[in-house]
Figure (cartoon, rainbow, N blue to C red):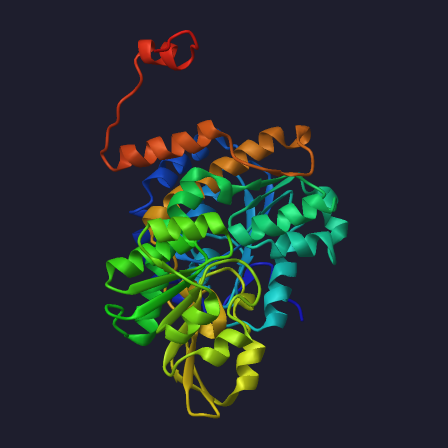
Length: 422
């Protein structure tokens, strides 16, 4: 089936609304705006063909506009079948002239056809959120790899996959792990995921969190965020972890910690944020109490063993948008949100623009950085330099009207010396 080179979206008539929402998000993305102003003058990405496999949201649209302003020849596709905002996709095509292949709710066949359409652009640089585009580029579309000088990866799951490729010595070009920047994972993963995950659960169910038991599987930056925001809304938070250091941290932060099967039996709301497979498995599903809500805010829907849930259930029905009810033979009902996919992007709008401002500043400056150095880099996973990371933090503070201290020459000398002591 042929697809237009302009893109494939649900309805171009939605573009005016999409443009309004993109502009609304831009108001809360001052760092990216400053970068865009410089990109217009410097044109650091001039002539570079870029293929981006990202969540098609208002915030992503502002990143795309910035990249195009810097001279990039950009094509976008969705990095998740349920995360696309159709009005934004329409606006990107008709208002901003950025070919976009993304339709909310697209089936797997369409999802991969869209990724291949983005790769038909023969990119010199990739921008991924989950490594699907890079994975396909290294397998079924490997003839295009020779065109690629570098890539960028947005999220934890993608970085894990890329490091696995590096270890197996199959990665064929350098990739910047944007997720590993402090101004990305410490803020986006914690504050963004924390707020947007609970926003999605509340939007899709209209359930009160206060007084309920919220079980968080995984206590990385995303898990910290979900637990913190859940506690702030009055939930009784339980954390499940496999890493003893993170489990100890959760205890010291004031949360109960226990094995997942035990937590599944008492939880009212269960959220996975690990990036692993079958985190909620058949054993957990068998022990759940009636009326439990299950959601995933990791990248792929592999975190919940949905085939096992399907086998346990005698009946399934859609009771609300993004809420599927599974009834067990003993009458217990379990509610799966957003088909087990990223709940914050499927059932809500994803992270607030303010936090994505820093994440996408990393993407924009990371693209500029990789383009300058790509020819000297090996096919490995790299981290953005600390000076760029700190500059993004400085710009964010400046936009918030916050001033901080600087070291005196005496203090700098002291910190760089070894002679002084007690």
